[in-house]
Length: 236
Ligand code: SAM
Image 1 (cartoon, rainbow, N blue to C red):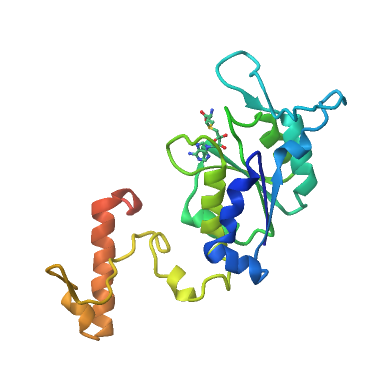
Image 2 (spheres, rainbow, N blue to C red; image 1 turned 60 degrees about the vertical axis):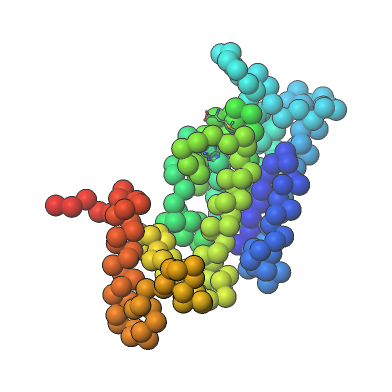
């Protein structure tokens, strides 16, 4: 998979070099390129040079804050978006990012992340690329507002890339985890079997695989019911 990130803070993505994502990049499963949006802001819309490399302007219709310019974003995206690429625009007004969306995106040949700042990106950018036939996804990390799209882009990149076949050392670990089957994961424990007066549930020490599976399933249901009842199908 190829991942392109466009941002005014390319240094933020030094984080891509750490953790499992670093290993996947070394093994060529994922190729990432980070682009400075200001490289596409050296010339103004009228063709004159822009020494300030301006990426934002006041909103039409008035109001607080600044909006990121469509002409600058258009140039930056045109430089990297491939024919089957998906344009991902992080936005608090987007569709909620979920494990099933992550799984879907893990099959895309290319993801291009447009990281907004200020009041966001001129709305015509999403409209234009959708009109051109590209898949354009405005995606929200949750019901809160961040300062920029970088944290959201990184979270999406991490969730998507770990689902690429061959990425995880142990493929089973992405099958048995929260949200893989719509439920939260069961609680996990390791040695010592007793810690500060709290014992690991007896069944896990029994070596009885069928009983362990049964216990884990019951825990998944109980935990989901207690912490995230919204994930459970409605009862008749
Ligand atoms: N004016 C925008 C609104 O009210 O919808 C908020 C802009 S926010 C300050 C700046 C940028 O941060 C957004 O363009 C987006 O890229 C990113 N952002 C903020 N919250 C986000 C969220 N919950 N999920 C994804 N991206 C977010």
